[in-house]
Length: 322
Image (tube, rainbow, N blue to C red; front, side, top):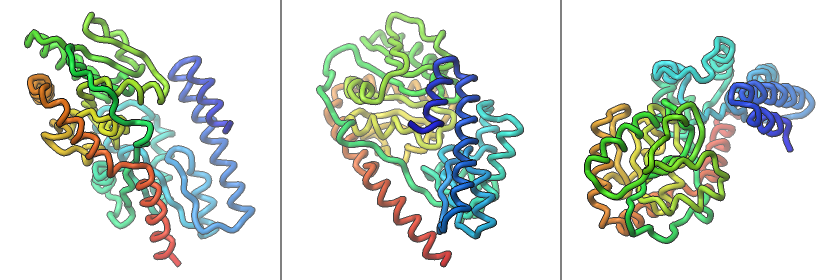
């Protein structure tokens, strides 16, 4: 097992802050290992994951090796504007800026992510969108709930940046409709203690294969993130035949066929989220139509498409730099 994975698991067992510390150690170790390897061979390019590739990119530039940054998140300036304190230490911000400066090319997972980099002054020609994928064999429609209560679901970190506070408020307002419904939450985070109600089920963090089994049981998956460069659970929900409600700050909104496989609302707008959830609840008779549309929407997010797009993108990059 890779050192970074071991350290991440160990850190996870002793708390979130410690987990970040252990993960950083793993990233630095891996960065040094890659940098050392680059000096020993002949390479055309190095693809580095953000937060773990500054040293390797520095060596690569000296050796005239093409540097490709795999940026999973929105540009850090956008994250700061969204009041996210996650990873915003001066040292981490300096590292992020250095990696972006050293990168010849930046791969981003969505149009939303690309726009965040463009706003920060990164030239458009340096940015390439490679949307993430979903295992369509693992995440697939199951038996429709078809009965009360109507089930909303959320999967991810239980944090303000993921909009969980907004989701809990919206669900609270929906109670006035006096309809049989419940909210299922999968994940852990700072807002765990807010999840206390008879009609709210908190499952904690679950394994990936468990989530694949549970998502098809939901009637709608809600991801009201204040910022989310992609939001893989959106693709997983659609592949499971479940419509979604997402904010316009979720990168995977590109997959949503509005009004058929899901709804998109302005980030942070509680009233708009309530309206979307109400529309979903009051039109529950269309469950089967939604499920078919959702599965259709997921077809363009197959991992095989991702792999082919990534390979073609890297090939084009290297061809232009010969």
